[in-house]
Amino acid sequence: MATPHIEAKKGEIAKTVLMPGDPLRAKFIAETFLENVKQFNQVRGMLGFTGTYKGREISVMGHGMGQPSVGIYSYELFKFYDVENIVRIGSCGAYSEDLDLYDVIIVEDAYSESSFAKVQCNEERDVLEPSQELTSRLEGIANDLNIPYKKGRIHSSDVFYSEDFKRFERLRDEKDCIAVEMESFALFNNANVLGKNAACVLTVSDHLVTHEETSSSERQTAFTKMMEIALELAE
Ligand code: HPA
Image: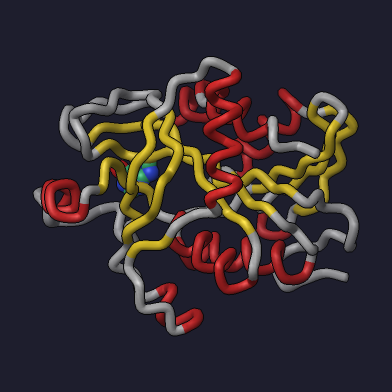
């Protein structure tokens, strides 16, 4: 059984899947943290792996950039592979001065001006929530591991390079968004419409106020705190 974008056989993907945007980060997580690793996908280079973490099963797979891409992969995992939980583990740009590079954010909800949810299932809301249960489990794990985190609303943007350089101030001041990424809104929509669970943990990789940024090699390896939180969901 395969889908247009995933070649795994049924049963090769765990109930819980961690999804970074970058498939090479998925490979890094599998190689660094998992045992008994089996690769289940390489279609379009969107690498996916299943393994064990502290003896418990979990999968990790890239979801690409933007809502259309995460929309495809999360839909196929939920609908055709019986995946129950997807946790996006991604990077974000800080809108708020209260955030620093490498801060961990557990997403409270996602605002978007995207038409994704409207087109996908006539969802009219522009703020979508993750699974409360999955999110509070992630918060409990972060507390147990003594990993500090911030909780807040994030902006799921369809545009990375905007000519409107002050746009982020409006999203921060009028919509209460503390940071920006490009996928959570579509992921939360798909979980809602399919009766599944999604959540999101982010690490700040760049700052729209101070203009500080991290390099792509730092991003691939330095986000271990976020990964360690999410990996504890293995079962
Ligand atoms: N914008 C959008 N998505 C992002 C950013 C950003 O600045 N940083 C990390 N993901």
